[in-house]
Every structure is written in structure tokens, then in C-alpha cells.
Length: 224
Image 1: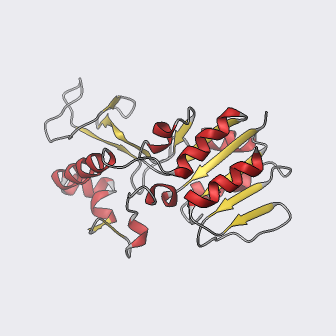
Image 2: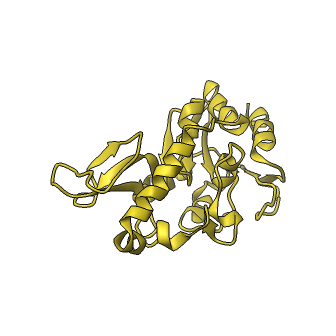
């Protein structure tokens, strides 16, 4: 049994129908990203921000995991697998992955604006007036621009102890997540799946220049 770390980005979820803001000139569902994904945007117009994530949460109920999610989950039949995702959806979990680290937060969770350690599961709309036990507004449990990435340290440790690293559907341009590749042990092979790969193949790195739903099953077959 081998320990495999899988780093996934927006390209995995895009094939399930979840849009990515980087695909449309920096706009996310026709919003300037800083309006809906920054502390400043939330302070300026909390109603807009809450409505934005309510719509994302609703959309999440209408999509399903695709073959890439399922192939990654299937790896657990033979190996120890940890998924480190930049995505805020729950498609990896729904496909069957049992160990998922969300670097940028989770759509189906909210947290207190008073105490960031007060985190709650949340399925439906979050509205102005939804308070925590300290009588303070709840906010989406999303890592916004300018905020710390609390799970980064855990992700670094997982990659540092892996025996193979699989990178799927990410431009490798968003930091700090893009730096995780550098923590992989020198002996660990790296598999990169993306239709527009930003990494060149080498003796150590195998590149699959294709969509996640077709490329990931090929990588999984090699790892099995």
C-alpha cells in the first residue's frame, strides 16, 4: 500500500458543471471576485455576499461527482489516499473519498464572525440575522482573498510524507497551494492532469494534457 496525495483544483469540478471565476476574465458568475470573495466585500455589502454563496450552495445540490472524482475515490481500494482540494464543493466526499482537506473552505459550512473556530454545517440559505451563540452574524466558511489558509500546514505535512503526488485541474498559479508540489519527497513521482498543463514532463513528472474525467482514470490505472 502506497501513500498518495492528490491535489485538485477547479478543473475537476468544472466538468460537473461548477463554473470557475478564472475562466471568465476574473469574474465569478458575473461578479468582480473582490466583491464576493474578500473581507472588504463582505463588510461593504454582506447581503450580496450571502446571496452569492446561497446560490453556489443551491447549485451544488444540482450537480454530481464526475469520473475524475470517482476514480480518485477508487484509489482508496488499494492505497492510502489524501485529497487536498482548492475547491469548496463536497464532490470528493460524495464520490467516496474519506480523507479530504479543503484549503479554501467549504460551501456547506458557515462560521462565526466573532470566533472563527465556531464552525457549523449548513445546507440551505444563510441570511442576515443568522447568528452564532455569541449573537454575532454567521459568514460563509470560505477562505477569502487576503485571509490565512488555516489548513496549509496540514497539507504540507501530507505532501511531505507521500510516495506519489497527483495534481489535477489546477493552473498551479494560485499560492500558497501552488507551492505544495515542492514539498513532495524527491523520490515521489508526480502525475499532472490538465488540458493546458503548466508543468513540463520530466523523468519524474508525467503529464496528461487532457480533461480530468479522462486523464485521472489513466493515472489511477498506472498507480494501481
